[in-house]
Image 1: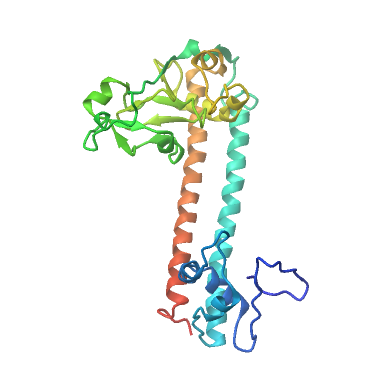
Image 2: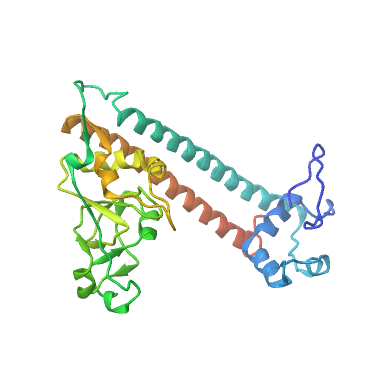
Length: 314
């Protein structure tokens, strides 16, 4: 349900319902927020008819209770929530812009197309095997046996889900390996650079804990580059791996392909400077994303208070 506009007209299909409000007592924007609130959505889900295609009919919808404050209070509540929505929208657009700027910066800085002030000289082109010892992880078999795991262990077991929900650093894993499990996997110390090579391929991360990797990851040992520079280089080519990976039941990369991949390297000082610039951009993005999450939580709290009458504005 969206507020009506005198300039817009919509066709409603049989899978939708149109709610017509008495404007003398009901503000459309207020009821937009009512119907999108967690409480109201919960009531609607509870009233859904579970058939082949779950649905709700007009009779049920008409009987769902809705609190009706005075019109002036409805408008005040709707205005307050709309202001928060505007802030959320502005933050979302700013984050998208900052992400685009970071992608452009990675493309320019990691290829030498743009040089930071104070740096010059040629970059050396090498293969990844020339700057790291790339080793694949190992998996105990059968993988689902409980003997490999111990929730009280200090040694993590990296799954792709742990990596996809993390940023540059892996600080926790959902599973931990037993002593026997560690013996049948590949231990990786904290501060190691690893990368996924199966399913979600090409996702790099730096370990912030002692852990082990299974055969869906590789570790870049004995790095002869600045670690964060290598991390950002791998991030910059993450999407390119899909063009070269082997397909089967799921996409995967082999270590030969990774070893042959070329990287352009400036001297160590310039590597550090480039990594610092990109790290600062990541920190700014993380701060904005945290602010967006906090604002979203604030809106949910406001809806709980204002749409139930627990907090009054008028």
